[in-house]
Amino acid sequence: QVQLVQSGAEVKKPGASVKISCETSGYTFTNYALHWLRQAPGQSLEWMGYINIGNSNTKYSEKFQGRVTITRDTFASTVYMELGNLRSEDTAVFYCARDPGGSYDYWGQGTLVTVSS
Amino acid sequence: VMIQSPLSLPVTLGQPASISCRSSRSLVFSDGNTYLNWFQQRPGQSPRRLMYKILNRDSGVPDRFSGSGSGTDFTLHISRVEAEDVGIYYCMQGIDWPPTFGQGTRLEIK
Image (tube, rainbow over all chains, first blue to last red; front, side, top):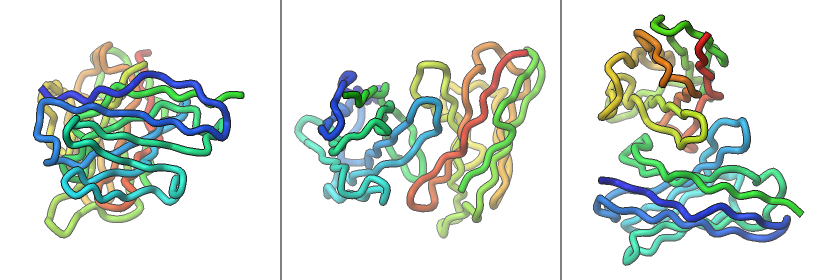
Protein backbone atom coordinates (compact mmCIF):
# COMPACT_ATOMS: atom_id res chain seq x y z
CA GLN A 1 0.00 0.00 0.00
CA VAL A 2 1.10 3.56 -0.63
CA GLN A 3 2.75 5.19 2.37
CA LEU A 4 4.38 8.54 3.00
CA VAL A 5 6.25 8.61 6.29
CA GLN A 6 7.69 11.89 7.53
CA SER A 7 10.45 12.57 9.98
CA GLY A 8 9.70 13.57 13.54
CA ALA A 9 8.89 16.82 15.30
CA GLU A 10 11.50 19.55 15.49
CA VAL A 11 12.15 22.51 17.75
CA LYS A 12 14.24 25.30 16.24
CA LYS A 13 15.40 28.76 17.17
CA PRO A 14 14.57 31.79 15.03
CA GLY A 15 17.00 32.12 12.14
CA ALA A 16 17.78 28.41 12.03
CA SER A 17 16.90 25.93 9.28
CA VAL A 18 14.90 22.71 9.38
CA LYS A 19 15.03 19.77 6.99
CA ILE A 20 12.11 17.34 6.93
CA SER A 21 12.07 14.03 5.10
CA CYS A 22 9.19 12.18 3.44
CA GLU A 23 9.96 8.52 2.76
CA THR A 24 7.63 6.90 0.25
CA SER A 25 6.78 3.27 -0.45
CA GLY A 26 4.19 1.16 -2.22
CA TYR A 27 4.40 2.80 -5.65
CA THR A 28 6.86 3.74 -8.37
CA PHE A 29 8.60 6.78 -6.89
CA THR A 30 9.40 8.46 -10.18
CA ASN A 31 5.80 8.39 -11.46
CA TYR A 32 4.37 11.11 -9.22
CA ALA A 33 5.29 14.62 -8.16
CA LEU A 34 5.45 15.33 -4.45
CA HIS A 35 4.31 18.56 -2.84
CA TRP A 36 4.87 20.21 0.51
CA LEU A 37 2.17 22.10 2.38
CA ARG A 38 2.10 24.04 5.62
CA GLN A 39 -0.69 24.24 8.15
CA ALA A 40 -0.30 26.85 10.87
CA PRO A 41 -2.26 26.30 14.10
CA GLY A 42 -5.99 26.67 13.44
CA GLN A 43 -5.41 27.62 9.81
CA SER A 44 -6.08 26.16 6.41
CA LEU A 45 -3.50 24.48 4.20
CA GLU A 46 -0.92 26.48 2.29
CA TRP A 47 1.06 25.20 -0.67
CA MET A 48 4.84 25.63 -0.41
CA GLY A 49 6.28 23.92 -3.44
CA TYR A 50 6.71 20.69 -5.32
CA ILE A 51 9.27 18.51 -7.04
CA ASN A 52 8.95 16.53 -10.25
CA ILE A 53 10.58 13.32 -9.13
CA GLY A 54 11.49 12.23 -12.65
CA ASN A 55 13.60 15.26 -13.60
CA SER A 56 14.00 16.93 -10.16
CA ASN A 57 12.47 20.17 -11.43
CA THR A 58 11.00 22.24 -8.64
CA LYS A 59 8.49 25.06 -8.30
CA TYR A 60 8.06 27.14 -5.17
CA SER A 61 5.46 29.47 -3.78
CA GLU A 62 6.46 33.12 -4.05
CA LYS A 63 5.78 33.37 -0.33
CA PHE A 64 8.58 30.92 0.46
CA GLN A 65 10.87 31.61 -2.47
CA GLY A 66 14.45 31.94 -1.34
CA ARG A 67 13.82 30.14 1.95
CA VAL A 68 12.63 26.72 0.80
CA THR A 69 14.46 23.95 -1.04
CA ILE A 70 12.91 20.64 -2.07
CA THR A 71 15.15 17.77 -3.11
CA ARG A 72 14.77 14.06 -3.72
CA ASP A 73 16.83 10.88 -3.33
CA THR A 74 15.58 8.37 -5.88
CA PHE A 75 17.57 5.51 -4.34
CA ALA A 76 15.86 6.06 -1.01
CA SER A 77 12.47 7.01 -2.51
CA THR A 78 12.58 10.03 -0.23
CA VAL A 79 11.86 13.71 -0.67
CA TYR A 80 13.25 16.45 1.54
CA MET A 81 12.05 19.94 2.32
CA GLU A 82 14.41 22.44 3.89
CA LEU A 83 13.09 25.76 5.19
CA GLY A 84 15.61 28.37 6.23
CA ASN A 85 15.66 31.58 8.22
CA LEU A 86 12.88 30.29 10.45
CA ARG A 87 10.63 32.74 12.25
CA SER A 88 7.94 32.25 14.85
CA GLU A 89 5.24 32.38 12.14
CA ASP A 90 6.71 29.18 10.69
CA THR A 91 5.50 27.20 13.70
CA ALA A 92 3.21 24.77 11.93
CA VAL A 93 2.63 21.22 10.80
CA PHE A 94 4.26 20.46 7.46
CA TYR A 95 2.86 17.79 5.15
CA CYS A 96 4.15 16.03 2.08
CA ALA A 97 1.49 14.87 -0.37
CA ARG A 98 1.50 12.86 -3.58
CA ASP A 99 0.12 14.49 -6.72
CA PRO A 100 -1.71 12.25 -9.21
CA GLY A 101 -2.59 15.34 -11.26
CA GLY A 102 -4.42 18.37 -9.88
CA SER A 103 -4.99 16.73 -6.50
CA TYR A 104 -3.39 15.04 -3.49
CA ASP A 105 -4.29 11.42 -3.01
CA TYR A 106 -1.86 10.37 -0.26
CA TRP A 107 -0.46 12.44 2.59
CA GLY A 108 2.29 12.06 5.12
CA GLN A 109 1.40 12.04 8.80
CA GLY A 110 2.68 15.59 9.25
CA THR A 111 5.73 17.02 11.01
CA LEU A 112 5.33 19.65 13.70
CA VAL A 113 7.98 22.35 13.62
CA THR A 114 8.09 24.69 16.57
CA VAL A 115 10.13 27.88 16.25
CA SER A 116 10.91 29.42 19.59
CA SER A 117 13.75 31.25 21.24
CA VAL B 1 -9.42 32.21 -4.29
CA MET B 2 -11.61 29.49 -2.82
CA ILE B 3 -14.46 30.61 -0.57
CA GLN B 4 -16.31 28.09 1.58
CA SER B 5 -19.57 28.45 3.43
CA PRO B 6 -20.57 28.00 6.09
CA LEU B 7 -17.39 28.09 8.17
CA SER B 8 -19.15 26.33 11.03
CA LEU B 9 -21.73 23.61 10.54
CA PRO B 10 -23.53 22.11 13.55
CA VAL B 11 -25.55 19.09 12.45
CA THR B 12 -27.80 16.62 14.25
CA LEU B 13 -26.79 12.98 13.87
CA GLY B 14 -28.60 11.36 10.97
CA GLN B 15 -29.43 14.67 9.31
CA PRO B 16 -28.05 15.83 5.96
CA ALA B 17 -25.39 18.48 5.56
CA SER B 18 -23.90 20.42 2.71
CA ILE B 19 -20.86 22.63 2.27
CA SER B 20 -20.47 25.16 -0.51
CA CYS B 21 -17.26 26.14 -2.26
CA ARG B 22 -16.94 28.96 -4.75
CA SER B 23 -13.93 29.68 -6.91
CA SER B 24 -13.00 33.09 -8.27
CA ARG B 25 -12.49 31.55 -11.70
CA SER B 26 -13.62 28.49 -13.62
CA LEU B 27 -11.87 25.28 -12.59
CA VAL B 28 -12.37 23.61 -15.97
CA PHE B 29 -9.00 22.71 -17.41
CA SER B 30 -8.10 22.52 -21.09
CA ASP B 31 -8.36 18.73 -20.91
CA GLY B 32 -12.06 19.06 -20.06
CA ASN B 33 -11.64 17.98 -16.45
CA THR B 34 -12.62 20.14 -13.48
CA TYR B 35 -9.97 19.89 -10.78
CA LEU B 36 -12.03 20.47 -7.67
CA ASN B 37 -11.24 18.30 -4.66
CA TRP B 38 -12.70 17.83 -1.20
CA PHE B 39 -10.67 16.82 1.85
CA GLN B 40 -11.65 15.83 5.36
CA GLN B 41 -9.36 16.50 8.30
CA ARG B 42 -10.36 14.79 11.51
CA PRO B 43 -8.97 16.18 14.77
CA GLY B 44 -5.25 15.47 15.06
CA GLN B 45 -5.04 13.75 11.67
CA SER B 46 -3.66 14.50 8.22
CA PRO B 47 -6.09 15.60 5.53
CA ARG B 48 -7.77 12.77 3.67
CA ARG B 49 -9.11 13.15 0.16
CA LEU B 50 -12.83 12.41 -0.16
CA MET B 51 -13.69 13.55 -3.68
CA TYR B 52 -11.75 14.50 -6.79
CA LYS B 53 -12.82 16.06 -10.10
CA ILE B 54 -15.99 17.22 -8.38
CA LEU B 55 -17.81 13.94 -7.89
CA ASN B 56 -15.39 11.01 -7.88
CA ARG B 57 -15.36 9.37 -4.47
CA ASP B 58 -12.09 7.96 -3.16
CA SER B 59 -11.79 4.31 -2.20
CA GLY B 60 -13.14 3.68 1.27
CA VAL B 61 -15.19 6.88 1.41
CA PRO B 62 -18.78 6.10 2.45
CA ASP B 63 -21.39 6.63 -0.22
CA ARG B 64 -23.22 9.10 2.01
CA PHE B 65 -20.65 11.59 0.70
CA SER B 66 -21.24 13.06 -2.74
CA GLY B 67 -20.06 16.03 -4.74
CA SER B 68 -21.78 18.26 -7.26
CA GLY B 69 -21.32 21.51 -9.14
CA SER B 70 -19.59 22.92 -12.16
CA GLY B 71 -17.46 25.83 -13.30
CA THR B 72 -17.05 27.96 -10.20
CA ASP B 73 -19.65 26.60 -7.75
CA PHE B 74 -19.40 23.29 -5.97
CA THR B 75 -21.04 21.47 -3.08
CA LEU B 76 -20.12 18.57 -0.83
CA HIS B 77 -23.16 16.69 0.39
CA ILE B 78 -23.44 14.33 3.34
CA SER B 79 -26.75 12.47 3.22
CA ARG B 80 -26.82 11.40 6.89
CA VAL B 81 -24.17 12.74 9.25
CA GLU B 82 -22.45 10.24 11.54
CA ALA B 83 -20.25 10.89 14.56
CA GLU B 84 -17.10 9.97 12.61
CA ASP B 85 -17.77 12.85 10.20
CA VAL B 86 -16.70 15.44 12.78
CA GLY B 87 -13.78 17.47 11.50
CA ILE B 88 -12.84 20.22 9.09
CA TYR B 89 -13.65 19.99 5.40
CA TYR B 90 -11.62 21.79 2.75
CA CYS B 91 -12.17 22.30 -0.93
CA MET B 92 -9.10 22.68 -3.11
CA GLN B 93 -8.50 23.72 -6.69
CA GLY B 94 -5.81 21.97 -8.72
CA ILE B 95 -5.94 23.98 -11.94
CA ASP B 96 -3.99 27.11 -11.06
CA TRP B 97 -0.58 27.75 -9.54
CA PRO B 98 -0.40 27.78 -6.65
CA PRO B 99 -2.93 25.12 -5.67
CA THR B 100 -5.25 26.71 -3.13
CA PHE B 101 -7.59 25.57 -0.40
CA GLY B 102 -10.74 27.06 1.05
CA GLN B 103 -10.74 28.35 4.62
CA GLY B 104 -12.29 25.14 5.89
CA THR B 105 -15.72 24.25 7.29
CA ARG B 106 -15.86 22.85 10.80
CA LEU B 107 -18.55 20.18 11.11
CA GLU B 108 -19.72 19.39 14.63
CA ILE B 109 -22.53 17.38 16.11
CA LYS B 110 -25.32 19.36 17.76
